[in-house]
Image (cartoon, rainbow, N blue to C red; front, top):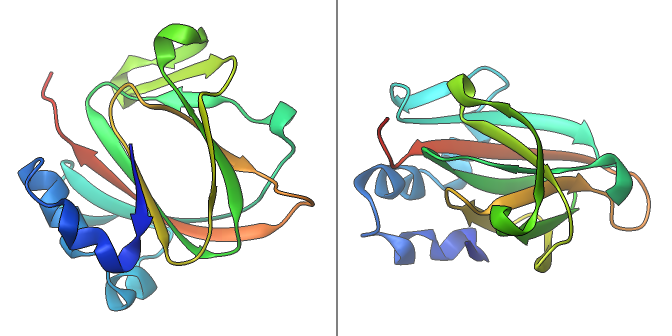
Length: 152
């Protein structure tokens, strides 16, 4: 997991070439141009999509994790609570291997607030619970990069 400010994104280069490509695009201009349709930077290996939704109470959210991709969550408008936990300490209740999606329930190890100007990188096996309201429901908008770092 990496939790940092957008302005520090390039400090995290060197972990994986696909991650480097995504980090280089954490700019105000690129983030403003990303829409609800997938914006591909390197085909299915690196792409970004904008999501706008209402935050929910903790009990209405769940953890998700991936095996091949990492996610970069970049808050554009609003704020949400996020929790992180290792999947081995959680209970899996759903999976769709074709889309690299694994869903879990259980306790969090880390809690943070994602606000405008922040980004969060969750690596494969960093289970993450997103969309959580802080005090009251809030409409948020964020850009999420999907970055393949492992092959089949």
